[in-house]
Amino acid sequence: EWSGRYWSKDTGRHGLISFVLPERGDSGYGEVEITFSPTLHLLQEATAENDLDGKTCTHIDISVVRVEGAGVRGTMVPYWDPDCDCRATTEFEGKVTGDRITGTFTTRRASSDRRVLLGQWEATRRGGAS
Image 1: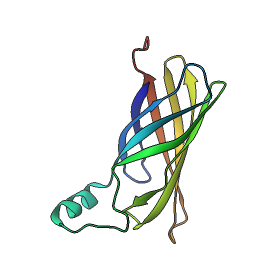
Image 2: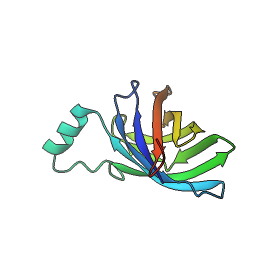
Image 3: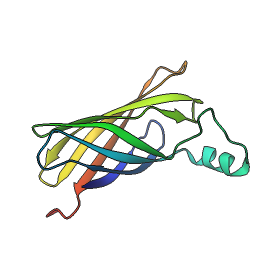
């Protein structure tokens, strides 16, 4: 089991990640906890009916985690992004070094804003040596 954190200067978001990579095998699964922008969070608390077409998720499943050598790649289940009021997809990749993984991710929004949003992540193996 692995756990860690992610952050993005492009979006101002940060949060926690956790996933399982079997010792033997090439795929795993996991979950990401998203922290949306502070202003949006305050607005949601003030608004009782914040039903944004499928609702804003704060925990998003990682749908695919693939391991190839020292590389890890994956995608998250598409989710509703309240910052753009649209669907978003995120892909990530990283490099395994011992009991640590460091990597980057890209997020694409299904909106008129077609910028690719970038971020970084890191995780450590639970019960690992470091």
